[in-house]
Length: 254
Image 1 (cartoon, helix red, strand yellow):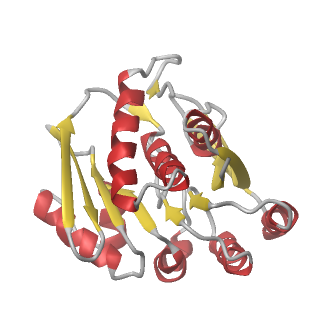
Image 2 (cartoon, rainbow, N blue to C red):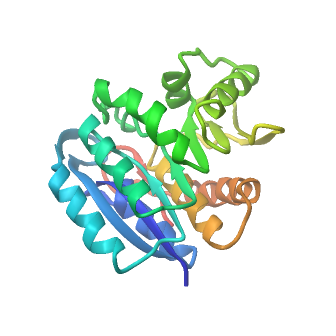
């Protein structure tokens, strides 16, 4: 069984973050490892607090875990501070972590800010060049590129800009469009577009589920485009099975 590492924050609803990643890894037959970067206080109706872990705490997790267990692939989710980014980048290089997927978490589904301003340039300039793929939704792609994405052409242009940051493939998810759920994949040579019907409602953790599914399919020897297609299908099924377990946004059922 291959090992997958998720580097991100704890979500007590288990609808996103580290908890969601572990559920997806398990569902897809991959053994999940974790490096926790922060603890959040949130529910389906409220996001109240972020408690970032220290560099010492993050470093200690890497040092202890990775001298014993070697992941085949890894993903990053919420990384709050510039110092945490730099610590994680140093450890990714030190432990030669391959098949890195970046989910550039910027805000929560409920609108809370999940990255400090001075950390954003480190994400773009130092972390993205280490990755095999970046999986961004429309608002994240707009933040990364400075473009206002209004249509498919905007998605294509944003994909080119993110690719030029040094990753090997770019996925932009169009779930924020009104009528269709259109995702694009770009590997520096060819664009691919997948369309699907948009399912009405608000859903927690779709980005985490997609990126952790993508990592899982890489572990199962899918190439990045195959992993893209399989992950879109996986998340669609999770959305279709979602339930309103609290008083706010729906939680995905994996």
